Amino acid sequence: MNILILGAGGREHAFAHKILESKQCDQLFVAPGNAGTAQIAKNIDLKVTNFEAIKDFVLKENVEMLIVGPEDPLVLGITDFFNNDSALKNISVVGPSKRGALLEGSKERAKEFMAIHNIPTAAYQSFTAESLEAGKSFLETLKAPYVLKADGLAAGKGVLILEDLEEAKMELQHMLVDSKFGDAGEKVVIEEFLDGIELSVFVLTDGKNYKILPTAKDYKRIGEGNTGLNTGGMGAISPVPFVDEVLMDKIEERIVKPTINGLQKENIDYKGFVFIGLIKVGEEPYVIEYNVRMGDPETEVVLPRIESDLVELFKSLKSQKLNETSLKISPKTATTVMLVSGGYPEAYEKGKEISGLENVEGSLVFHAGTSEKEGKVVTNGGRVLAVTSFGEDYKQALKKSYQNVDKLHFDKMYYRKDLGFDLA
Image (tube, rainbow, N blue to C red; front, side, top):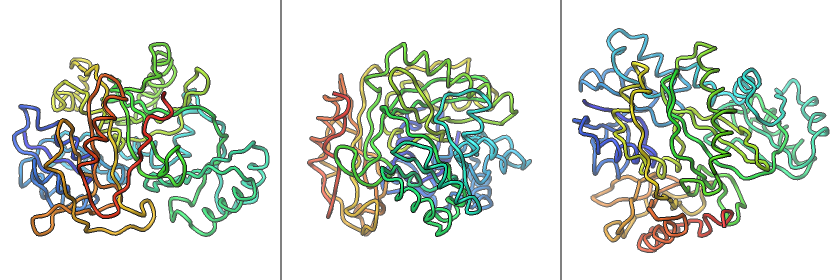
């Protein structure tokens, strides 16, 4: 079949790499893609939110499967757009309906869903500009640190964790009154801080059946020792070493099953990924957030560990026969190290030439923010390349990634050298 992947990052390059392993893929398109996807698939210059242009393309090229990488098109309703159009409704879309995507599109909705279905999470309240003073009063009832979350999509950067009460009140005002995160911050969720270690669990579901994919741990902060500003992710490790069978059973029974059952009870059309951001407090798992697509850079360590045919798994979603497929996962550990532009996650320059790609051995290099210019690969984003390696454990895999990172160069290249520091 002909398959189209929407997106331009490392996640989409990893999807493309995995899908091309399937004998069921005839032709693979990526829109808009990057310099990495251009080497293995056909890049198409389409905006991921221009549904009419996507429709014209899939009909012209006889595309039978659409894989939606980023959250924006899902939150805007691309799955509904396909399912409600007689010319498109037979195309398999990997991604939930608009209603399902609200689990990521609104932090408040996600919290309400967890409350309704008894899914363990931090206590919270939500506020708007009109209830700013009530929000400040609520902050006074909490202990530091204070967690403020923009309700809407803010490209992974809409969460603030602050130690000082007065600073938290000021930031709440910046978000609600001064539009610090634009429309995403018109409503802010304030929640109690949970002290523990974070991990992510990925689930593929057809809305009825589910498969739990490999666990992963990512590193969001720009600085070593998890300091500095939040980013889209500086690296990831899979599986998570501290997740044993006992913890995994708790996660499945208390979180995964009630989530999938909740989708069914509320008649939500959901065929795609549920990314569950968790925190382990003592020995107990709590949900921090839901995302409705695969994470980035977690995809770059999760997908390479899946040994089953990904297209076969995706095909089963439309007919809700995911339970009839098998999921085989490599026992090896995968790690990825993200190389970013100098200045990221704040202002950074693009168009820097990347050298050394041909020297990488024994690792996969997924392009995140790259493009081609006059036959050369250049930087085209904050996060530029993800270097993924396998090993018997995370230390061995990281060592291999770092050895290959040393062969790569672009002006002002930066990466974290301490991934896995909190696992030893």
